[in-house]
Each structure stands twice: as structure tokens, then as C-alpha cells.
Length: 100
Image (cartoon, rainbow, N blue to C red):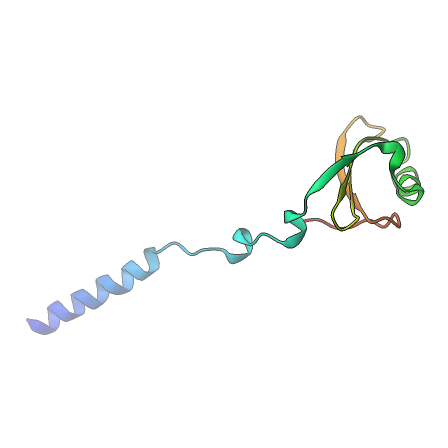
């Protein structure tokens, strides 16, 4: 009888460990890039390299808003030629930065 009770307790213990939700560390991780603060800047104040990159890679697009981070990176909100709105990230050299 004692063995049956012990087996039952261990079985319940094993089942309950599978019921505990797992925490996805990647989903809860906030990168330094996400924590950066952006201040709005005038589109006319953007470096020419950034404007040229938008004109080259997104032909017919217009820059609606521009923001500058503490690290000197730029966040751009553009309207494409299709009328869609996109958010882009670039450094001061006009090189695109991947944001996740």
C-alpha cells in the first residue's frame, strides 16, 4: 500500500512539473536598441547620406517624420510610392540597421 501511495505522489509530481508554464527568455529580453530614446528632428536636418539612401532604396518615397537617438542613429517614418507607411532605421552614413 505504501508503494502505491509513493508511486502516486511521484506521478502527480512529475505531471505537475509539465504543467508549469515556461518563460521564453528571448521574448522577455529588452535589448539596448529598444531602450534608446529618440528625439524628433526636422527632416531638413537629416544628414544627406540618409536622405540619399531613402531616395535610392525607396524610389518615390517621402520622409514624413525623423527621429534621432542618443547614439546618433535615425528612425524614419516614410510613405512609399504605394502609399504604405514604413519605419526604417539608419546610421548617419545612410546604412540601414536591422531592428527586431
